[in-house]
Length: 271
Image (cartoon, rainbow, N blue to C red; front, top):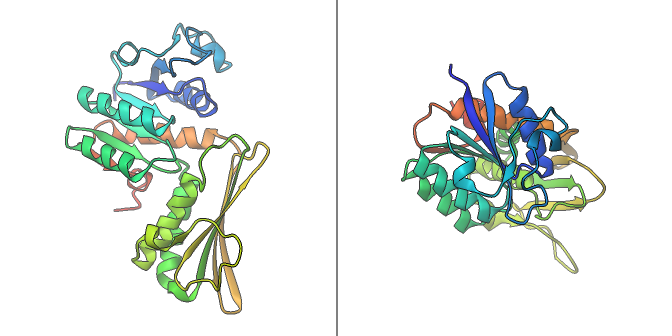
C-alpha cells in the first residue's frame, strides 16, 4: 500500500499534537501538512518541534489550500464551523475526512451529510477511542435487552478547558441507549436537572456533567433496575488513544466509496 499523506487540522492544540504524533508513529501514514486557525500563535512554527519531535520542515499554516496540496486525508479535531468548511474542501478534492470534532448541531450534521452527495468520505465519531466504541456497542445491546424497566443515566467528566456539554462521547452513549430501545434520543434526553423536577419520567435518558483538572475523559453508563444496577465504564488516560483511533480510521477510509461512516464501521461493529 502506498503511503497515505495526512494533514492534521487544529494541529497546535492538545488533540492536534496527539494526532501529529500518532501520524508520525504510523508506518502507513506520512504527515504532509499542519493547519490551525488564522490567529493561532503557532503559525509559522515547525510542527515537529511543537510536538516534541525532530524538526519536520512543516510549518503550521492557516492556508488550507496550500496545506492540503498532495494530501489524501484530513484528520480534524477542531470546531463545528471549521469542520464544515473543511468538509466542503475535502469533498471537492476527494479527500477522506476523519472528524473527531464535538459540539456539532443538527444543522452541522445535516451539512456534513449533504457533502456526501458531492463525493465526501467522512468518518465521524463523538469518540475515536476503540474502547469507547466497543463500550457503545455493549451499551446498545444491554439497553435493548433490559428495556425501559431499567433507568438509564450517563455520567461524564472532562478537564476544565472543555467547552461543550454533555460531551460528544456522552451523547454517543446516549444514542446507543436510544438505538437499543428503538426511540429518539432528543425526544427522551434529560441533559440537566434543577429545582423541583418531579418524579423521573419512565424511559428518559439522563445526563450528568462534571468538569475539573486535567481529566482526559471518564464515562459511565448506569442501567438501574429494581434492586440492581449495571455500570459500564470507560476511563481515558491519554489523548493518544483518540489519535490512534483516528489513524486507524484514516487507513480504513482511504479506499472507501463516498459515504458517512462511524468508528463502528471502522471496527466492523455494523457488519
